[in-house]
Image 1: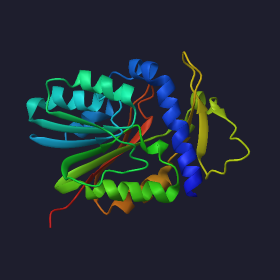
Image 2 (image 1 turned 30 degrees about the horizontal axis):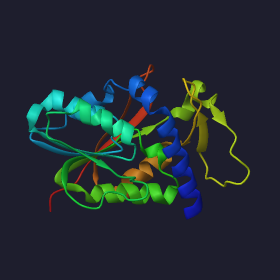
Image 3 (image 1 turned 180 degrees about the horizontal axis):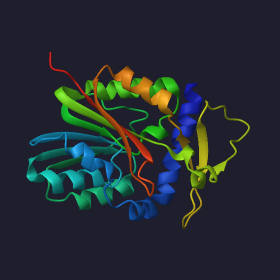
Length: 234
């Protein structure tokens, strides 16, 4: 995928979240059930980098679970969602950064846990997704963990019904879709469907050791496919 297409797809999603931030925040205030499975592999104290943190609900989940032993850094490009994260995490050891990680992936620091939730399907291009996961693996401290989830939306009829045709002047890759938003304000978002083969390739690209892979979330309990990976100590 060329750079011009990557920029265009990223702009579609930036505009989507500008339009939908309010309703998106309201509909996504609760923790994902899959996080409980992940939490069983975590121990305090814990430094965390949450990439694409949105309204900060993963940080809230961790603070409720582990208390003040959590030092949380969240990155997102949307100011409205970051404002909600600031309010939700007030009084905790939280640092929130406004940054478009598609344009500028996190390039410094080491953390006990690096998390990528609700974000992978917005990264354009097969090669860029693999490179992005390698960058995140570099941010994991020795002995630490990388957790990511792939939204398996294409497997569910209610999401396939939301797919709209691409404009004629944009060339995308296999499993790239344009989905409409059926809430208060019409909007479109770019989403990539990560199948089992690509998921395994993404795990391999990190160079980390797989701890567990499982499915969870949504009404059917399998809407996201998670992988938890460990960076071995030297």
